[in-house]
Every structure is written in structure tokens, then in C-alpha cells.
Amino acid sequence: MSSNLIEKFKNKQAFSKLKSHDKEAFIKVYDESVKDIYRFVYFKIGSREEANDITSMVFLKTWNHIQNNTLVDSKTLRALLYKIARNTIIDHYRETGNKKTASLDDEEHKIDVLDETQNPQEKMDQESNLELIKSKLPLLKEEYREVIIMKFINDLTLEEIADISGKTKGNVRVLLHRALGALKELVEVDDK
Amino acid sequence: MTDKDLIAKLNSLKNISPDQNWLASNRELLVSQISNSGALKLSAWRVFIINFNSFAKAASRPAYALGAFVLILITGSLFSHQVFSSAKPNDSLYIARIISEKAKLNTMFNSDERNKLAVQFATEHAQDISVILSDPQFNNDNNKDQVAKLNESFNEEIKSVKTHISYLNPKTTTSDNKNSNDASGTVSMANSLKDDSGVELFEEENLNQNITPAVNTTSVLIMPTNLASSATATLPIDKVGEGNGEEKITINADSILEEVKQLFEKKDYNKAVDKLKEVDEMIKN
Image 1 (cartoon, rainbow over the protein chains, first blue to last red):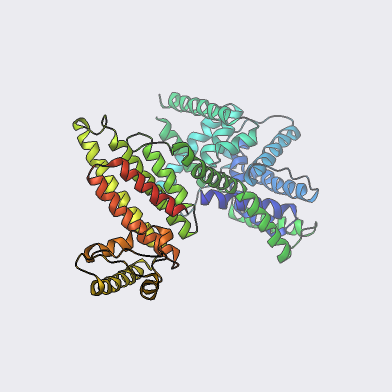
Image 2 (image 1 turned 120 degrees about the horizontal axis):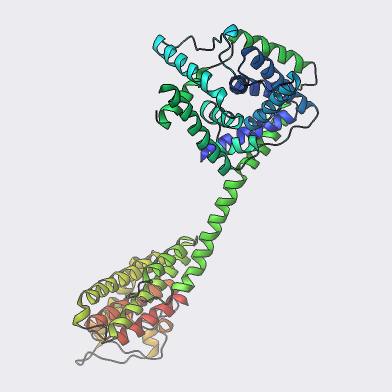
């Protein structure tokens, strides 16, 4: 309970500081969440360069909201950043004219996102996992892919996912169950 | 592949992170952009206000929950006593009565009041036990075990009454000794003046010179030596004199309790109840 209270306090504190245009608070938020946002965008878009651009854009948009005092209260600051990221991705699709299916297997832009501190076995495992997701994740429905990324890769809570996607917690739970089932089916078909 | 395996594979993708060079350059760019567009450095006072408000907002729910819990606890301890006070020692609700009484005792901060209440509760318990045991339909061989338990409880309650009365007046022991000394003084003097029958009447003047603090009556019956001590102790409260009221209550209550115990052992429950009521009244007054 006390850790929950501390978490709530930190969240409220960060929100208040951001609303007061505090530069240090914004940099802190950036440092804490840039990797998560990047990962979310990357798995949705499928391209490293575009993920870099969109991630930068997400933080600039957040700052613009702060500047214009249009920062909407959200359950958590993390949920707010994901909402902005989600909208930025939609804007990106609109601008490029077509909804590009996430394809993480672009040979021309080979992704080197593995942690260099890992040992060779871990690297190989992660490579095979990445290959698996690369090939199967884009085949999932957009909303299935989104909840899987948020829940199992970026560790968001059901409450946060519900807040971001505008669904109820129950709906998110059902969606997650179905998404996992669909991904499992795809992986098993491949195994056979 | 099980769901667990699949989730484990998905979890392993947490290690994916952007290029470190990009991270550093993007941070620099962002800092320069926000520095040129109205970013502020908050004063210490402003930070304090923000922290205070954030804490108040974050702690509001647990604080309300705690407040509600304390309110329920206090209300419960105040009113549950009235609900359960009619429960008798052989009822299933008796334990609830004991708990509510303990809760009520624990909410009292004045130790004297708390001890008075504890005496009152224990006396009431003893009375209830006496009433139940006076019922021949209950007090028979079929309920042997329960009767034995109640007897034991009765002794405990009497012990508890005595203990709390002694807490009410910590000087009890001293005053007791003092009184017994006074009594023996009186008795030794009486011995020197008594005739063969051992009983003698004194003139008021004589008596006041010797035992003024103890007796107010115009004439006094001096008891034989073996009865003198207990007679002094069992004098009614208004006849004891003008000493410390609490001490008198203690002495009287102690002797009455001894009588109650004896009556209880003799199975004279009705008289025991009456005596207990006396103690109860004495404490209340």
C-alpha cells in the first residue's frame, strides 16, 4: 500500500510540475519514459528511423501541450504519453497516406536493437524471439498488437491500457486474452 | 507452446532500446528546444507547494478510509455495549458483550474512570453469574461443567473487582494498616476498660477523645477483641467518619466482597447479588 501511495504521489507531483512548465521535470519524464515510448512506436510502425522520428515528435507534442496549458489529466503520466504517442502514430499514417502494416523484417533497415551487455546465448534467444515477433506480430489485428505491446512488452497495467485505449478494464482483459490466443495460433501454425 | 512460454518470449523483448547515440542527440535537441520556449526553473517555495498538494491528493483516499475505519470503531465501541449488555454469561452473545466492554474501556483515557467502569462491569458479571446459578433449572447435575466454569468465572470477576478497586486508590494498603492499627488501639483500650462480659458502654466525651475520627454516634458498642477489626471495616460508609472517601469505599467494598464470596460459596445467591449491588452503587456514587 505504501509503494502505491508513493507511486501516486510521484505521479501527481510530476503532473503538477509539468503544468508549471518545469524544465527539469520534463527532462526527468523524458529520461524515464523515452525507451518505453520508442519500443511502443517501433513495434507499431516497424521501422527504426520512423520510430526515432515519431518518438521525438511525441515529446515535442507533450511539451506543446504543456506550453498551451492543454495537458489533459490522465490516470498516470505514462498513460498520457502513450495516448499522445498513439495519436501521433495515427497522424503519421494519415500523412503518409496509407496505413502501413507493421513489418519488422525490413532487410534494408536491419535492426540492431539488442543489448550489447548480453551474453551470446541470451543474444541468440532474443534474436529468435525477435524473429518470431517480427514475423507474427504484423499479422495480428491492430488492436490485438497494441494491447500485447502495452501489456507484455511495456508492462502497463490493465487500468492504464483501458485509459489509453478508451475501453473498460473488462474489455481490455478480454481483448488481451483473444490477442494472446491469436498470436499463439499464428506461432503454432508456423511450428507445424 | 503454452501461454506462459509465449508471454516469456514477449517479455524478453523489453530489452529492445533505441540507439544510444540517437538517445543522447535527441535529448540535447529537446533540451535546447524547450529552453527556448518558456521552460521555467521552479522556486523552492513553489516546489514545496506542489509537493504538499501532491501528497494531499495522493493520501486523500487512504486518509478517508482510515477516518471511516476509526469512526466505525468508535461508534461500534460506543453503541455495541448497549446492544450486547443484556447478554448473560451462558448466552452465545456474551463474548460480544465482553469484547464491546473491553473496547469501551480502551476508549477511556481517564484511568480513574476506566477503573470505575471496569469495577462496574466485573460486578455486573458477578451479579449475572449469581442470578444464573440461582436458577435451579440451570444449576443442576446436567450442567455440571458449565456451573463449574461459572464458579471459576465468578472468582475471577471478584478478583478483578478487587484489583481495580485497589487501582482506584493506591493508598489502600497503607490506609488499611492504619485503620487496623486504629482499631487495635481502640480494642486494647476497650480491653482495659471492659467488664467480664467484654461489652461496655462509654460516655460520648470519653469516646470522642479516643476514637473521634472513626465514630460519630452518641454512644458506641465496643465489640469483643475477635470481632472488633471486622466491625470497623464493615461500618456503613456514612458512619465511618470524615476521612478520605475513596479509602472508605475501598475498605467497605473489600469487606463486602469477602462477604459476597462467602455467600456465594454457601450458595446464597440472592444475598450475594444484593451485596454486589451495594458494591456497584458504592462505586457509582
